[in-house]
Length: 263
Image 1 (cartoon, rainbow, N blue to C red):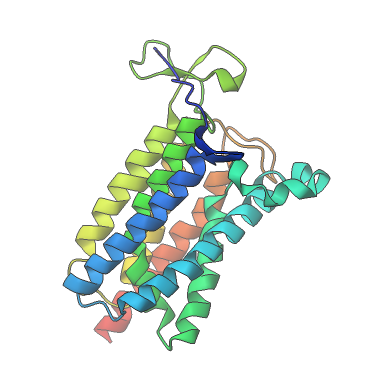
Image 2: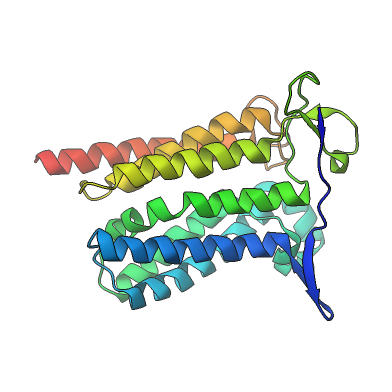
């Protein structure tokens, strides 16, 4: 059984300004998006320019931050944030919903596609393989902060971990690391390899939706459920409820993509 290292959430300070690891993980996510995106433009003949990629990232950042925060407020902690409205803008303290950020990015990509006269699904197909490593960076930030710990585990499990932030000394699953492995590294590998060859419009996006939704549904069984709009459920958590529509939409999108190709 392991003890969480209890990292200082502040990476370093510049005078009165505290730079937190959680914020640095977001910067890392955006940086890898740019690097991988430029690689795709150079090697896979993506229908974007480097200048357009920079603009795309700006739209994506707004979608992630605004959507992710609003998702946390509306899906998981409406009571707290409505009672403390000033805390809504304190994103540097953590508290971002993937599903909210996902919806925010979809809206941002639709606006960007309209501005540049691109097909929306072409844009989402392009960015899908660039997202998982950014998700892994965010989960690493959660682990550093010692938040979003897992459910109680068998103490004999070699990687079971005690998270003092949980308020007890019970051995738990380090579920943040499970998220990194599945929704981050495994999903990135699947999408990167799948998108190496030309695919029907929307197919890569469909695989992302199915992959993320399925992996998130699995990892939620090892994560201490959050209090959401349906309360705290150990049977089907809020994260699982929000993942089910993603899986269904991904299957439909993949079916339509290959049906259009056949026709």
